[in-house]
Length: 126
Image (cartoon, rainbow, N blue to C red; front, side, top):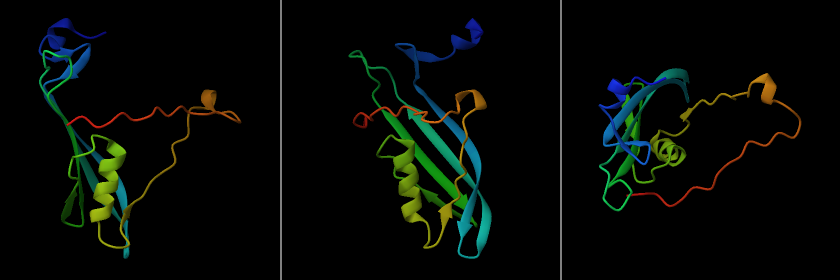
């Protein structure tokens, strides 16, 4: 259960967090033409101020991948993690890509024919 004193320090809009920047680092493996190396993906999600009409004045997601002493950043135009990751990938040198690993759902959710829902993406908010 959330501590009400801590929650009071945050701004919410219709129950969702706003007027803040959330940043985190994700260690991952990057494959280069000379072999696999460690990389660090940093994401920054900027959530704007609530507007009187309901939405926030801005939502911006940017990704930065640090690998082999270089940093490759997304432009932050789409608002979607997958699209920003594709933007970073386009900027990497030829033959370089982020190594993905398959995520297996917990045993209780695994079965033949299981479909994991994908919701359609609305237009990006700028």
